[in-house]
Length: 290
Image (cartoon, rainbow, N blue to C red; front, side, top):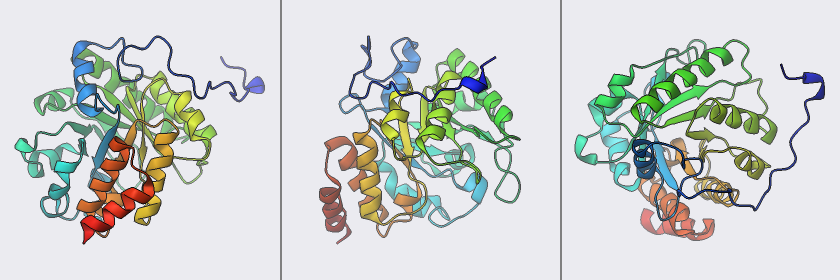
């Protein structure tokens, strides 16, 4: 049992030092199976090592919130410009054309909505994920929530067991409750716990000191976009996260609630994969918007 009276905050993160003894282009994937590596390569571009994920799984807890009222009208035009699509199985089966030919990160847990207590979830049957040929499964982790932490850790453990068995990577998604601090200490803890429990990818939020969060996590981190920001601010958020070591973004509202979602996702894509500056990407957004 850890001695909580002598829990010392980490300070040796080796910033600027590359991962030792890594030959595969994706962090932490050297010892994965061939099938796992193949799916991870679909998610993270082999040339840039990065990924632009388009998240539109919001409806599974929020219903038809702004921007995802009609997937066929609002989201389908964005799909060609994303590297990965993140959605629930109901939306995948009803609203994502099979010939879209994009890797899918499937929301693999469900159980509660914004009307009740979030994250009291169970995981879906792995056979459904296999039938739908998904490239990854996403599971929420409510680290620091006294009621839901153990439930969500068990969900991730169970999903990681099945993912390892069938060669499907798992993304741990760090939840942030009203009582949880949005700082590097919390996100560093939550991200590391996800990886320690078998997550192959972690989705978390950008914060001050984010480079330490990335350095201490042995698997790729992608950032959540969070609440809607002005377009330039959202692009600057992406830029700072990538500079601090993030392997990509998994954005929803900052794309599909943009003034011009198609222009915005193209600007994000150029910033992530082509090392475009936020200012240049914003000019691209304005040009495409015209």
